[in-house]
Image (cartoon, rainbow, N blue to C red; front, side, top):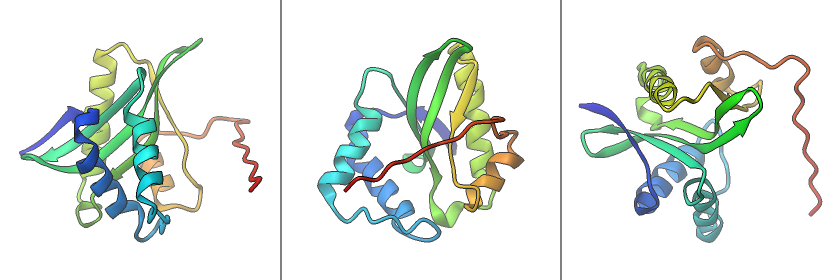
Length: 148
């Protein structure tokens, strides 16, 4: 049975395993080979006061992640999703869309007014989010400065 539950720091190892499995492979190919960096990143997302992270489970197995924060903004309280993913072999079967629907209902019940996330226009996720009712913010620009 597919269910959604809030995630907590106690599930750190399970979250890290799924995150590594998904994002270290196609299409992302992120280099998460440093276990300390991975631990710190996941802790940043799930170990803070305003963390809001949800998991999609098939019985007791974690198969999907939505890791982010609750942000109190002038336009209402938002759920800022930093990482959203479904186990690779379960993608393209409607689980991501179902997970987003569950998140929206759950967030609305908590008086969250909107969801904010970012992705790359060239990533498959871009079209997935558009298909699920997300749209680009007019005149929004994300900036980045690498200084290493």
